[in-house]
Image (cartoon, rainbow, N blue to C red; front, side):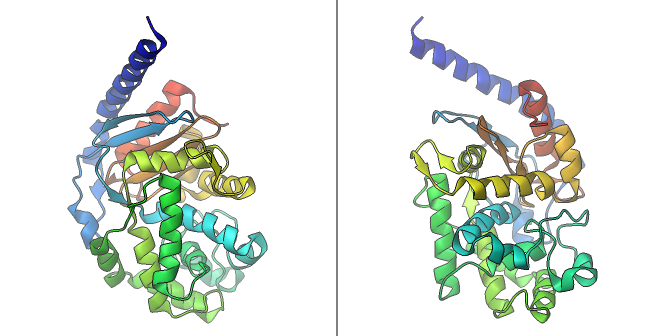
Length: 318
């Protein structure tokens, strides 16, 4: 048997294994609900479940409807954090946003009122993400968004990457709580710009669209401490990638991050569209999509799928 034939058989085996895990995880879909507080997200097909695994040698394995495009939502918080850390430096960013998990829902205002004079506890909750987005450099919303989108295009290798205007508008029109968070932080000087302009930028950021393979490639770059083996480029400094990976472990799965660390044990970030990005250090990146969410806002079948992957391939970093 030639090496090519051997590799092809190995790829088929991996894809078959992923399909088996997807079928097992699908049993959990009925117990979740598609997000509807952003009306455009309610249009997702609850039954969808897909996964891609991206390896350092450029190969990727996938199963399910991996061509389906979905919005990043809170997964974008990791990307904007990396960009802002490169723009502003650690001291500037962490004077305005903390580093501690909250234990509260991702959209909670509670800790802002009782701790640190309006300083968000970390960049993975909505308040912290809004503060981080406000630090993106540029002269206008369009200019700042294009900088973030260009960074995303580099990370995914897709020069045509764009965003869903429908989702962005839907999110902007219903962002009452995020407005409240922003005005509270503006009162305390954490945010200094016009809140409506910030919400325009933030909702576009959350509405950037990817598929599972692109998401897995981003996960791989974080898994390799900022290095993209496909383009052979150090896309972000190693230290910044490590900071982002640490936040994903401690805060990336909302207030279920502790349970996820025990059951799966990898840096990961979820979004209420149903996406989950995983970074298995020095091994591979994972992209999952399953829009049926649990009560916390994580993909219910996607989390189960990652648990099964972690058990089968011994993924935990702990």
